[in-house]
Image (cartoon, rainbow, N blue to C red; front, top):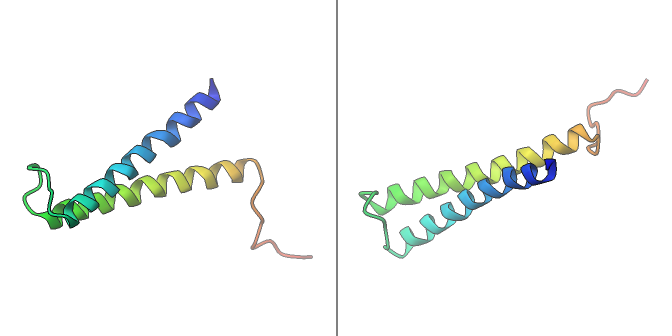
Length: 79
C-alpha cells in the first residue's frame, strides 16, 4: 500500500509536467486554449507547470534518498 501511495505521489506531478510541455508546444504552434488570452501567457503557465512538476519529482527523490542514507555527505569534516 505504501508503494502505491509513493507511485501516485510521483505520477500526478508527472502528468502536470507533461501537460506543461503540451501547453508550451501548443503556444509555439499558435494553438492556444481560450482560457489564455495570449500565447505568451499560455507558454509561461506551461513552463511553470513543467518546472513545478519536475521540481516536485526531483525533491521527492532527493528526500527519499536522504532518508535511506544513499546520498554522500559532502560537507562532512574529517577529524
